[in-house]
Image (cartoon, rainbow, N blue to C red):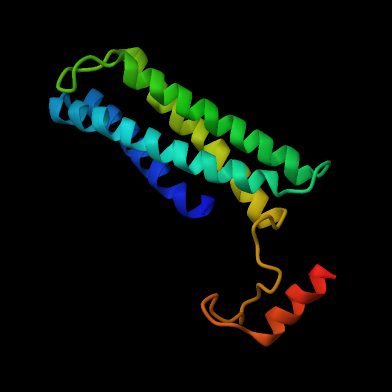
Length: 158
């Protein structure tokens, strides 16, 4: 679930920061309103993704590089959520222009999210966390049973 859930907060929070930068350039209050509501939506999605990520992290074997990278990934992304919460909290009513600190926090949050995302990619792409043991370029759909995949999974249980 975690890989499916991260796209929502990442997209929402990144778009909020883009709105903040566009607000600085154009001064259009509509962008302040949009950023104001994108942030709490992204925070809710981020908490849901974090819960799913924590569940996944507990399944990683102890004393492995993957466990420590996963901890760092979760920690960085928790800081991202805190930074965006502070940015949102400091903003005045939705239609007002936020102060410079609020905007700087949202930009900082996105930059940190890039680092957190890279660490998540490291977990999947480099360390193979969450990758099905039967994964290959010709693997069958996950919606149908494959005897070769079943054999691999059965061998792992032994």
